Structures are given as C-alpha cells and as structure tokens.
Image 1 (cartoon, rainbow, N blue to C red):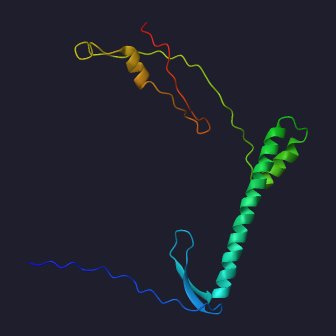
Image 2: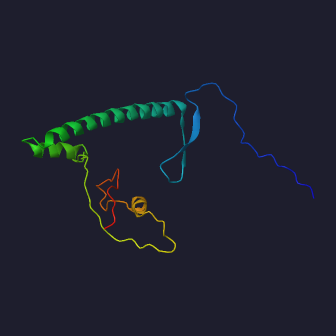
Image 3: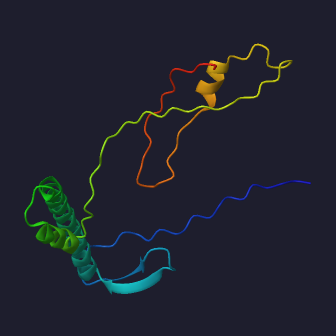
Length: 156
C-alpha cells in the first residue's frame, strides 16, 4: 500500500490593485466573542474609521492618565479634607474607588502538635518539618499575604 503526501491548499491571494479610495471592500467585523459579521464599505470610509479608532484610543489613554492623577490627588487629600462629600462625588463620577494600599506586618504565635512515627520518622527534624509545612493565607480578598517567615520553632 502506498501513501501519498497531500499538499495543503493555500488560499488564493488576490493580486494587488491600484489604490482606489472608492473601491468597495468586504471585510470581517469582529465584535467580542460572538460570530463575526461581514460588511462592505468603501476604502475611504474604512480609512476614516481606522483613523477615528486610533484617535479615540489615544484620547482614552490620555483621559485614563488624568483620572489616575485625580485618584492620587483625592486619595492623598481625603483624610484631611473638610469637604469629603465633594471628593466622594468626584470619585464616583469618575468611577474611582476610594481605597488605599497599606503595607502591614503581623506577628502570629502558633502552637500545635505533630504526630511522628517513631519507627519511620526517627530522624525527622521537627523544626524543618514545621518550616516546610506551616503556611499563612488570607480568607479575605482584600488582604494579600506577601512574605511569610517562620521563626523560633521549638519543641515544648
């Protein structure tokens, strides 16, 4: 039995045509994850849509930068402000959440028991076992646990 390798077909590429701003072009319109639509429009209209899209994108970046600056100003001034109501209204109008990040540290003393098999675990280093297996996590989405350091492990 002989097998023949079949060359995959490549889609035909249309030859380049001279620039014509009034040429009608059919293109795919992608809107999120829904099925694509196909639209037909003149090249000149597509060019203007692309230009306006780039302009709008730059404007959005500029406005987001300004909103971030306003957020920083409000966050810094809020605690000492005599007019927190106005600052809240400005923040709400701009979709700014009035939050601040606080770096924190805490000391937690933990005690417990560990069961060791005397026959299998005769050389188990209890201190190392605690270092390797004790961890801290937050049950609140607002608290992020960064570094955890286990120190002063001792047998009682």
